[in-house]
Image (cartoon, rainbow, N blue to C red):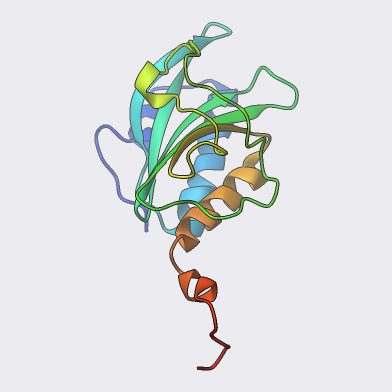
Length: 160
């Protein structure tokens, strides 16, 4: 079950009565519950449409995801930074692997949280995802990092 902390997202959400922010909190809560992750940490805030939104960090195995939600776009998007100790394998076309967010200036995001493209570094990269389903798929991929390494060993067959 997800943990609770004083700097956590769920504590932060208790101080917001904005429906859109609460809906975003429910998306994150479903993700946390589905994958049995710890409560996300609030790293900072940014203003959007006169409302304060959280920038959060979610730990997934040996990786950290920094997440900034963009509800004002169509479709709404998630800006994600992945910092992993191991290369992240194929992403099945989940996002544009050439998108370079390094050097961008985004409210609420420190420059060191914005990395270059996945194509250049499969351990540390930033990307955009279109919806909560893409976000869940990325978490599933991060959870599997290292699990299928045996499949890359040459000259082996299943069952050996």
